[in-house]
Each structure stands twice: as C-alpha cells, then as structure tokens.
Amino acid sequence: MIDFNEMKDVAVEACLNAAEFLELENNPEVIEGETAGGIKTQQDIAVQKLINKKLEQTLIPILGEEMEKHNYRTTSWVVDPIDGSGWYSRGVPYATTAISLFVENRPELTVINNFSTKQLLVARRDQGVVINQKVVSASTRKLSEAYIEIHGDDADSTDIGFKNKIWASGGCIVNQAAIGMSLMQLAQGSLDAIVVLPTAHLSPWDYLHGYCITQESGVLISDEAKSIISSITPMTVFASNKTLSQEISALIPDIYI
Image 1 (cartoon, rainbow, N blue to C red):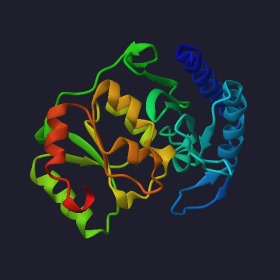
Image 2: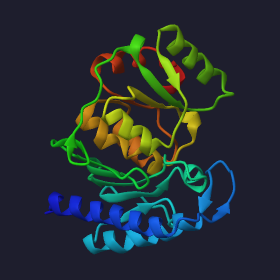
Image 3: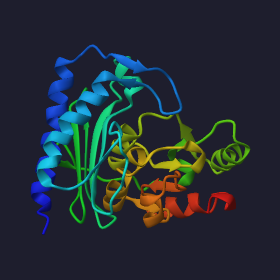
Image 4: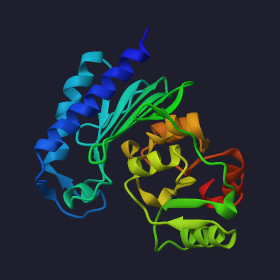
C-alpha cells in the first residue's frame, strides 16, 4: 500500500533539494545547444541524479528526462529535472522542476517548483491544488475570453488552421513558456488552456505533469491511457473548465482525434 502523504513529502523534499543545489550552481553550463529536444545543461544531469537519489528510497520506478533508459511503467515517478533549460541558461525565471507520481496509469500527485521565484505547486488526487500552501483554482472563462497556449508546429498547415479557428472564436493565443510554468498559471487561473498538438513532439516528462493538475482544477481532453504509454505526443488539451474544454474540443481537427 502506497502512503501518498509520504510520497508527497518525498517529492517536495526532492524539489527543494534541487532548488538548493541550483541556487549554489548559478552558472549554467550548456552541453547541448538548440535541438529538437531543446537545450541541455550540466545542471540538468546533476539535478536528475540528485532527485533520483531521493525517489529511489520509495522503490518505485523512475522515468526521467536525463536518464539513459526511458521505460515507463504503469506505476512510476515522472521527472523533469529542469523544465525550460533554455530559459534557465539565460537566467529567465520560467524554469521549474517537476515530479509526478502515476499509480496504475492514474495520476496521484504532482509537485512543480519554480526555483527562481520560489513558487511550489502541489496537486493531489481528490485534494485539489495549492501553491505555497494556498489553495488555488482555475478560471471559468469561456473561449471568447480565454488565454490559450498552443504547442505544435508553426509551419504545419493543420496547426495553423486550428490556431486561426481559435482566433476567430475570440480566443487569445499567448507565447509559449516552459510547460511547467504554464501549468502553474493554468492552476491559478491566469492561463485558461494549454493545447498540446501531436506535431509538438513533446516527451512524456513534458506533458504528463498536467494530468493531476487538470484533474484537480480543470478538464482534460485526451485518451488518457494511450497518452501516458505512447511514445508519440498525444492530442491533449488541458482546459480550465468544462465549457472551455467543449468549445476547444469542437475546433480540434479530425486528423488529431
């Protein structure tokens, strides 16, 4: 039997340990430049090892961005040691550390820490979402009032057509940030939806953290089981409320459903 209160404490401590390390390591060392997978720093690898050392105590398998093997199990920790490494390498406070726990493909908890602004999000299944121990709630805005972040391919004609439909419906498409930071904004109502299109080519550690947060504060549109185990980016919408999710769902191209 898994003690989820204990697991939450472990994940929070792992995030805070990472933050302490990064506060001391304040000179990012880029070891891989801009690629499809983004920038990688030496600190990404070091933080992954630091987090693993803590999570391994739980005896639950770990899926981490900076691990050599990426074998997702139905019960796993999912770790992004530094989400937004490009921002981090430039000193922009958009980067986060994200840790989630899935048990039998069900999102049980997510912890996201913005180590620059010291904002710590904790989402627990059936217990809501808090940021710095304050309960937060998602927005109730409809599409004509919504701020929406879309991850896809700016050159793909289907993606462009979808974005045009959002604009035509009155929605406002905002610039992409690191997805961990965006999920924080979604949870507290400053962002209304995050749309992840298959053309985004995101990895599981990029988008899986949204499941628990949306489950507790919004609405998720996707085939959850397929999304979690698939190596292909799913068609996923993290929306803040049911009305908005239905409006966005109606605009999704058939090719992505």
